[in-house]
Image (cartoon, rainbow, N blue to C red; front, side, top):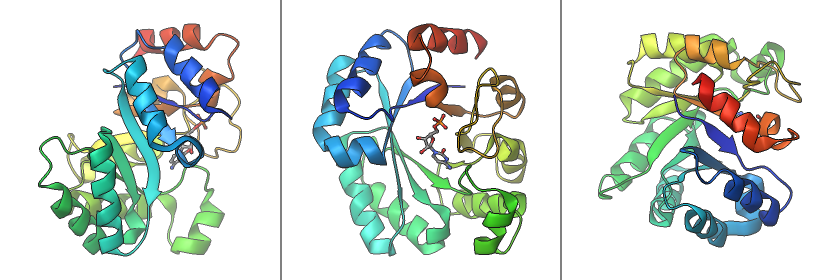
Length: 227
Ligand code: C5P
């Protein structure tokens, strides 16, 4: 299990200060919409300058026509990040096109597919996908596995079933983690770190419980002790 810290703070300075304080730890940094739209490529470079060993997950959840997604995937590979994601609902052709385009890159980033956003409850999910979350997440995971992706973004509660339906090596990255039962915020399906461990989660993604803590460094250390 490898910890992934969500850099969702309101400014580049605050995110970089958080990264700086965590630079001696072997962790992943998640750069999402907010940070990437605002701070772009220089932000990725600044993170690597702080610690060249930081692994970077670019969480942009690509969703478009296959060729446009593959073009974007290639630009992402050129950025030198270690992992990014697409929406599984973009479909099998998009998955294939992205993976084929990346196959020429020697150190290609890992590619994950988003199954169901962890902020969905059952009712709102089925209004869009016309199936229950568990069933649809598993179906999306199988499709992603068959089309060469490295893993999925899912809730902790789907991690085990997804591995059973695909492979133990198929990665699960799970947001909505409240390591020690902290406030859920807008997340609907939250799990503690203990449950995440039981469910075989490969990457717990943790944002607010770390950056809103009085002492984020201590919190990260407490988390790392557990995993
Ligand atoms: O603050 P919190 O720990 O809830 O942060 C979770 C992070 O994971 C946020 O950056 C959010 O955008 C992201 N995420 C998510 N659900 C997904 C995919 C990403 O919450 N399915």
